[in-house]
Image 1 (spheres, helix red, strand yellow):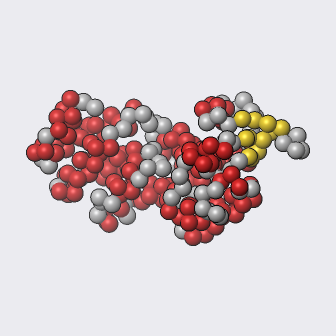
Image 2: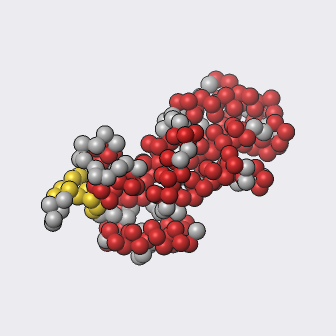
Image 3: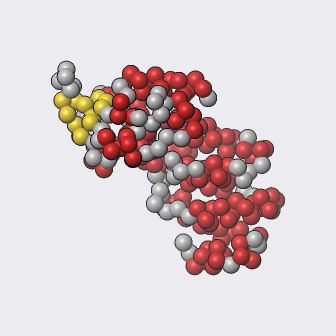
Length: 238
């Protein structure tokens, strides 16, 4: 965070002064350029509030960038906080509605559908860290529902092509960072083993996900077929 932005956030008068908008917009640009790790919720909310108070100064392209940063924070509700600060006509603008659709697909468990949308948009693919943050979110969803699954079953959820090799450059680092292990299945296939701790405490499903989940969030008891049924049921309720 720049010194100027820090001073704006610390000064109540400046927080509500339209003259602060350019510096806060610059902060958003810096967050997007720096990737997932650069994020300032307070500054973004301050900017969105100033846009509410000064609609003639609102820039839809900057709003989209704020929403993209919120999207990268799933499963937090930051994206929704930003969205609710927009007027309905702005929520329906293509630059915003595209992200709403992507957010809803992810949060509702329609993961392959979310990746289809991502792959169809060069603009989304160009957002630094968006694909990585989506995979991290998906790993949380899977960790809360599966106990085991094959590498090829994992593929569509992580946007990689089957058949998947254990040394896959996308999959291997994710498995390692989440401490998921590879074992041989009953038929000799390679199976991903997910620690029970991931299902119990690593991620919390919300809203339609939790409502549609058989038995609440008791992921360790769910078979792979149960999870597929769950994903399909969630898609049908949206």
